[in-house]
Length: 394
Ligand SMILES: *Cc1c(COP(=O)(O)O)cnc(C)c1O
Image 1 (cartoon, rainbow, N blue to C red):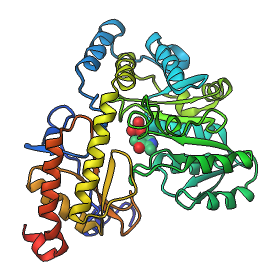
Image 2 (spheres, helix red, strand yellow; image 1 turned 135 degrees about the vertical axis):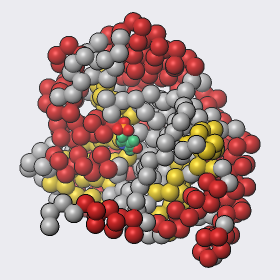
Image 3 (cartoon, protein in one colour; image 1 turned 30 degrees about the vertical axis):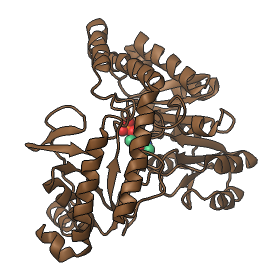
Image 4 (cartoon, helix red, strand yellow; image 1 turned 60 degrees about the horizontal axis):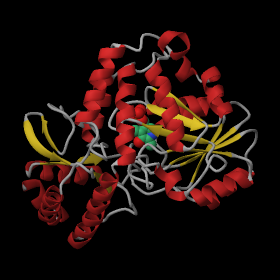
């Protein structure tokens, strides 16, 4: 029987994989109201606390007064306005690249870049833990698609030897579910040795990483020759919405000419670009946000180790607690929620089977006292979880 959706949904429930959308009843911030309950949240990607910043809000409001609401059309028709253009120029300067191109979402930026650069007869090599948008882009491109072992330059080298046509190597900068950094110095060296191009999606690195928030390329000091295609998203540490690709004049012009997810969509509201210009300014100039965040990260890792939690090799605000199966991940999340804390459980297929986890994310908007509340709750819940029977009663 075709379209037996009820069975499909029931199976998902039975496998503890059914997803539900928490309803947020106020702005982003550490203290949120969700489904009628006040909670202390550790699951947002608003790493620098800019999503609800008064100056960013004021810039959005002023932008709307001046530019209206809708983008009106695609960039190539009549939707490319002065704030979009100014933001592109500012992002180029920020990334130290000749040019940058603004997109409405990171998903689209990734689809656009990969599908415009490689096609039939070419090769795309991706880290097996890359973000879904990058994996989808690789499949959609029609290029020969292969995944190398996570962050493994030798595994990449092996595949590069067999690559045909133009070859694009694609990696997350900061891996979104593990929080670890791509070993870019080694990966870029392999790519260059084989005349392949490196594409880095640094959705989670821009803002938290680098002396001025310039992300993983600033962290490692990598230029245009190492990373010809650099992607950033604006909905995370920038606190707004959209994404960009930064690179050479020719790369950006190629995307404008050939990238279907760029051409066939309406531009983002220009007022959002006004807001991003303000948040970029704060992201660069307010180094205290990064310093405070790093203090919280260090304290969390120390406190979690004392409790005996299994953390991952992450120097970033993404600090997953490895739990194992989906049910246990859900249980721990529920126990924390009962204590007033919101931490998302991440389950397959978002992460590999058997690696269910709580994805704790920290933000510069969290206070040290709020972090202590999380550690205290984890210290209480973790021993209960070790014994599933007791955990279920908690
Ligand atoms: C969030 C994310 C994206 C998608 O960006 P959106 O702007 O939310 O569409 C792409 N890549 C990575 C690594 C991400 O974490």
